[in-house]
Image 1 (cartoon, one colour):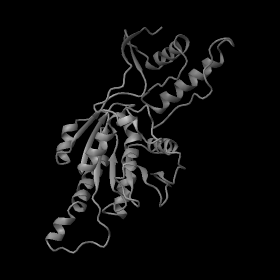
Image 2 (cartoon, rainbow, N blue to C red):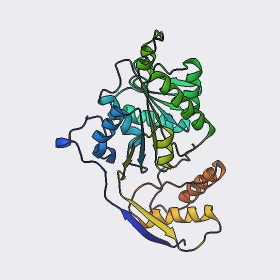
Image 3 (tube, rainbow, N blue to C red):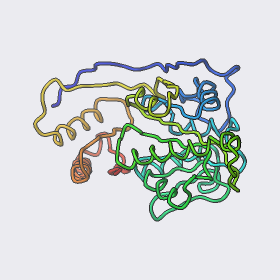
Length: 303
């Protein structure tokens, strides 16, 4: 048996900012999100700055809530768009579905997404989730991202080549779009399209915020603390030689001894994920009928 020891319990939501007066909030937003407590600070920072860096713990709600806050605050015109980038296509599709459900909207109308070979959006879309590569591809057809008013680069700590190229191009586009008055003062001919300023938001759970702030011209840094639910951390007292066997034993140890709920297991590769999932299903089918049953919804998740 894998011996576990409880190290820490996180049971409170903490926020840097105070809640809105009388707890006012749009009915579509998640009341348990700790981002709600800093909603005014986030909206004000984005309204008053061209670029903002937001750091929030996993589960704080920054990915699903921040785009809705900005849209509901009127920071985007009627024909504007909030683009949110994700490093993986699974994240882009699932988060888009979640946000659409929170707003009681049909996916592809007010909230949509664009991944390779699948663009679920419409001219009425106001919040659109992209993979990094798809937004770069959008820049090939539209060098100034005329449709976008706010671009949110989420999970920026997963530094890939596409993320770096994306940030460099966004900085170039922002400089070109946010200097309209300067161009007019110099007597340059303005472009025919309505040149609206572009705002950039970089979000992450763990990154060197000061470096991103410096790169974006001294952008303010906002910290959102807290999770939507209590999280208990356990650690093994001994080194485990076989991590798959340890994960299997730990799963059933939690399943048999703890209260009902779900178990999420992280493994390094697809082969390990499928192997453990099949092993758990096989063992579950051989357990006595009167024992606690494993739900038939067990399935591997791939990113």
